[in-house]
Image (cartoon, rainbow over all chains, first blue to last red; front, side, top):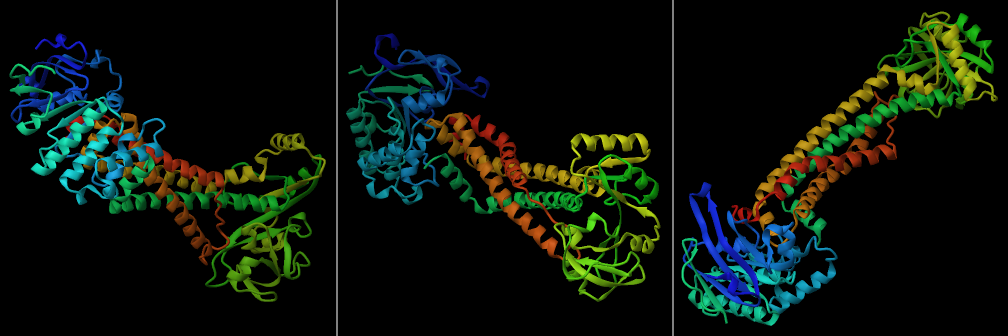
Length: 232
Length: 375
């Protein structure tokens, strides 16, 4: 695709490639994408098509073998501290929740603020507020092993939001949930995305999930498979 | 929740491992505290004994490095020293550690010149002082009386001779409290060292200044070959036993330090390997690498500090027990200066940092994408 046709893109990637095993495995192969600020974009495709790798690179969890990524026109190569960049701009949600098992729900949210200058009681209050909003008022002191999948994912959503990111990267966030919880979590996410004007990039292979996106990017074998749906 | 409470939580979740690590460190620190306290106490006891007597300078043989320098014939040197400026008294002292009767622990036996200033600091608590130089009586310290189960008018057998206990005294120095004191003449007689002393104690008049002490030392060096004038601190510093005990305490510090750092290193490395995914989560949510390092260092320093504080208490307790053992009473008087204890705490912090360094670097260098998938 012509990424230059999205002049207001929050994320833009050009000719992204990600190789493993000395080039024998190509997780991504010449991917070009552009995501507008405030968009909900679903990245769909079969397992192993490169969805997670794409999200990892956009989230600075992984560096591409070749190619360039820009965040609001700033090249990723110029980011001095990727951790700081993630904390300031990106929230992550994973299929497997990735909560810390020894921390309760509240602490699992607050933990993302440790090391933030000036973090303290304000962040605890904010974490409580987020959890309450996500329907976990009575579950804050519970540990992940005492919570349902839907509750865990809502804690993960609160953690992703605690540092007020611009961009949420969600990797199969409903993949471990039953259909009722899946629908509830998806509704929560999209509501929050609209309400806060966040950009949401979600990897999924569930058509009912991708159907709610503003735009769908299809991937196959590490490449963009089909022309993308037009941006709204 | 903050970094410190998270660190405590991480330690608390593996209580057996944390307990073993803290135990190993506390044992090492206890050994350091006990040995160093005893070594310094040994030095301080001897110095306190010399200082309590009010001696300004000690004249002895140059090569003497025993707890008490080797005996030498005193008359010529003593006469020479009496002619030095500011000298008020030159008093001989002879000492030996001897068994006093059967089934009794060995005690120090001091021979002090009768009527000299050496006796002035002792406080008589029972009986009387010895009279004539050759009267077969001794005075004993309160601790010696307790250890030897002797009272005034009891008899003591020393080197096959019977002595009556004329009095019991107390001294500011534990070494003297555990000792038997007699006249120098008697001591020379029973030890078969007529005319000999271990040291000559020199008391200067009150007008003597630092420069006069230096001049005295220089004059001894120039006019009395083979002899040296030193302060009590310098004498104790030359003492081989003090040196050996200090060397042992230094070796213990080194070994305990190495073992402690290795134990912490092993514990933290295991912990980091087990928590790879968790560290991946923290990196993903925006923890900076330096915050990860701070977390690991906090955990390792908490472990070593806990071990250190327990070790200090155990070390002091062990020393207290040793001091009260019959065989050791009156011989050690451990010293634990605040500066030393602060130094031990500082050592523990260093151990934590040293042992946690590699695990902290390893944790901070994890790549979040790989760490997240670590099982």
